[in-house]
Image (cartoon, rainbow, N blue to C red):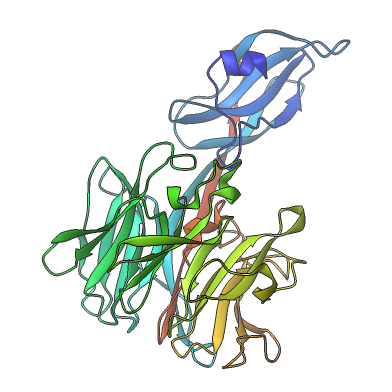
Length: 402
């Protein structure tokens, strides 16, 4: 690892935390083939490892060149090397559904089609407009698509990192988004803005109010994490603290001393659904009542999933009687719904299967960060991100081959 770091190589982009280099083939001449990133190129590299003592000698050498992601290196005795040139593209898809009944009403439909990354989708409550994050212009920003006319336009495009686009009104008149710096995980401040979709007029909603998870349907409340109001030094991304901000008074208070990821307001703004890490890094979905003041008592948390499988990105049906979420309970990343008791919000009845994503080429499972999934529920549809993976197999002949 010391040699690889000194060489300036980055590891596998599919691994979120830290540089990871996976050995793929140990050649007879002592070189080990692996994939690594230098700049924007992710190629096959080789480094010499002595079999007797496991020590490396020399610096890594690039074996392949070009763009794409070069993976799964193999070799045969005559010196030929094979590898896959993998391409991965994030687009947003829409599933027609009766979301108050928790069932699909048609086949998935592609909402965006671009070689750039499109993710964090957010639907207006009436399902007529879609906001999402994209770097299709060469820089990251919020885009808006009218799902009736199919018109597409950018809402923001700046050098400031932006994310978490969410509507506050049923007709999609406003989109809210957070801005944050390069050190977002440990940074001290996150500001939230709204932008009017008709004329692009922007307004700052609050300063240092946490990285926004949701903007309430009435537009009066905001929930997020990472605000200095949480008054603690975070040990990790899960320790940033969850805060509730009253946008009229501009005052924030701590709801919980850890991060509730993707906290979403219920339609009546009395409850929050969210996921957080349970034991063994398994994400579990909960619902919590929003207290009139002070923090949420952990004993009041209502488990929606049992923590035996990864479950993430919950969102509410428009009548507040169902929770939708992603889960790998069947070995894939799929969408499920859980009926709720209208008064207590506790699970009532069996889990319902909404959409199965079992295809290797196009799937939710290939989304390496669940935040990108952006599961968003409207009256008649559900929007989410899927990754489409394609690739070619290449063979390199040795240099002395005829």
